Amino acid sequence: MSSNATATVVRTGAGSRFVIYTLLILFCLYYLLPLYVMVVNSLKPLSEIQAGGMMSLPEEWTVAPWASAWSTAQIGVEATGLKPFFWNSIVMVVPAVAISTVLGALNGYVLTKWRFRGDTIIFGLLLFGCFIPFQMVLIPMARMLGIVGLAGTVPGLIFVHLVYGIGFSTLYFRNYYQQFPTELVRAAMIDGAGFFTIFRRIMLPSSGPIAVVCVIWQFTNIWNDFLFGASFSDFDSQPMTVALNNLVQSSTGVKEYNVHFAGAIMAALPTLLVYIVAGRYFVRGLMAGSVKG
Amino acid sequence: MTQIAPDVREVSARPQNAGRDWLREALPKIVLSPSLAMVLIFVYGFIIFTFYLSFTDSRILPSYGWEGWSNYSKLFRIRAWDTAVSNLLIFGSLYIVICCALGLALAILLDQKIRAEGFIRTVYLYPMALSFIVTGTAWKWFLDPGIGLQAVVRSWGWESFTFDWIKDGDMAIYTIVIAAVWQTSGFVMAMFLAGLRGIDNEVLKAAQIDGASNWALYRRIVIPQLRPAFMSAFVVLAHMAIKSYDLVIALTGGGPGTATELPATFMYSYTFTRNQMGIGAASATIMLMAIAAIMVPYIYSELREKK
Image 1 (cartoon, rainbow over the protein chains, first blue to last red):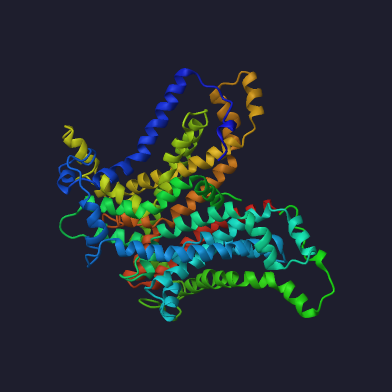
Image 2 (cartoon, rainbow over the protein chains, first blue to last red):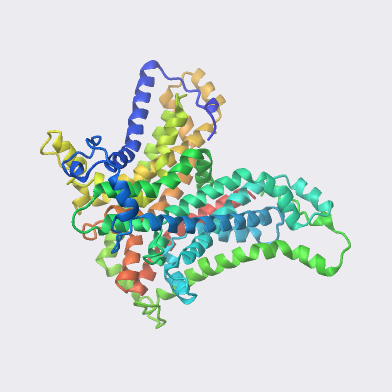
C-alpha cells in the first residue's frame, strides 16, 4: 500500500476527526479482542475461566497450560501434546514452499521471456487451478496417494501442497517478470547467454522482492491448511492445524479451555511472526493473489 | 501483455547445428512441462475423474457402474444438502455484504491522514495471517454461553443476558458470519484502501472548490471509482465463501445438528464418513460449477485486459 502522502484531500473538522479516531480505536479493540482472549486465558488456571472470568486478567499467572499443550495434552487418543505435529508442519512446509517457489520462478520466466503460441492459455489453466474447490480433487488424490504408497505420510502432504501451490507461485513470478525489461534479456542473448545463464545471472538477482512475497504466501497457506491435512494424513503425520482441531474437539471429560487457547496460539505463532516481521510483503502477496499483478 | 515481450529468439539466429537449435527452441517448453503436466493431471484430470464418479454407483471406494443422473437427483432430495445450500446463500451474502461495507468504511476512515495509520492497518489485517482453525477455536469458546461472552456479562451482574447463538440451530449460522467477517474484513479494507490511494486528487479538489460536501464527494466521485476494487473483493469473498470448510469444522462442527452445514462439509461427510462417494462427487461438481461461474469470467477478463 502506498504511503500517507497520497491520502485523500478531503478535509475533516475537529469534531469529525474525534469521531473518526474513536471509531478506528473501537475497531482496533474488536480485532484485538480474540487475541486478547486467547493470550490471557492461556495463562490462567482452568477454574478462573469456568468461574466466568474469561475477560479478566489472570489472578494467578501460570504457564502450565502452555507446557501441557506443547508436550502432554491429549491429541486424539494419545497424550503427546502438540510438539510432534508442530514439527510435522515444519517438515511439510519447508520443502513444499521451496520447490513450488523455484518452479514458479522458472515458469514465470518462460511465460514472459520465452513466449510461445498458447502460453496465455497455459497460464490461464494454471491460474484457474488456484481457485478450484479442492473437494473436487480429494477423492482421486486420496486414491492416487494410496496407490503410490504416500497415503498418510508427510511426503504425501508435501506433494499435494506442491502441486496445488504451483499456480500461485507462477502467478506471482509471471506478473513480476512481465515488468522486467526484455531488452536486457535480449542483449544477453546476443552475447550468447543461454536459457539458464540468463535466468541465473539476470533474472534471479532482481527477484528478491517477489521471492519474499511468494515464500510468505506459500508458507502462510500451507501452514494454515486444514482440508488436505485432515484428508491425507495419519495420526503420525498430522499437521499442526489438524492436531489443534483434535485437541479442541476430542477432549472427553473436562474441557481444558486454557490448554486449547495455548495450543491455538502455538498454531498461530509462525504465521503471525511472519506477518509482523514482513507485513508489507504479506499484504502485497494478498493483493496480488486476489487482484492482479 | 500489451507489448508482447519481443521474442528473444529472433535476435539470436546464428548458424548452429540443428541439434542445438532444437534444444534452444525446446528448452523453455521442457522447463515448463513438469508443472504443466502436474496441473493437467492433478487438477484437470482429477476434476474429470470426480465428475465421472458423480455418475457412478461409488460408495466406499470409487466404482464404475454407470448410474446416469441419479446421484444428482438423490442429492437434491437430501435435506442436509438443502440446508447446506441455503446456509451458503445466507452465509455468503451476509459475509460478502458485511465485509464490503465494513472494509469500505474502515478504508475511508483510515484514509483521512490518520496518525499511526501503519499500526492500525496492521491490527486490522493480522487475522488474515491466522488459520481458520485458530479463528474458529478462539470464537468457539468466546461465543460459548457457558464460559464466554454470556457468562462474562452475567458475572458482571446482568443476570438475564443471553447470547447463545452458537447453541441455537436457527442462529448458529450467524456465528460463522461473525467469525468469518472478523477474519477477512481487514483484508477487504486493504483492497479498498489501495483503490482509494489510486484516485486522482485533482478531481476531488475541483469538486471541493465547487462546494461539494464530503458526503457528496464520496458518494458521487470516490465510491463510483472503486468499481474494480468492489469487483475483486466480490470475487475473492464469493470464492472463499463457497470453499468455506475449516472455519465451520472448528467453530461448530456443522452443528448443532446440521444447522451450520455448508456444501464443503456436506461433501466431506458424505464422501468419507457416510460412504456415499457418488453423491459426494456430485456435490463437489456443483461446487466447482459455482466457483467456475465466478472465476472463469474474472480470469478471462484479467488476462484479456493485459493483452
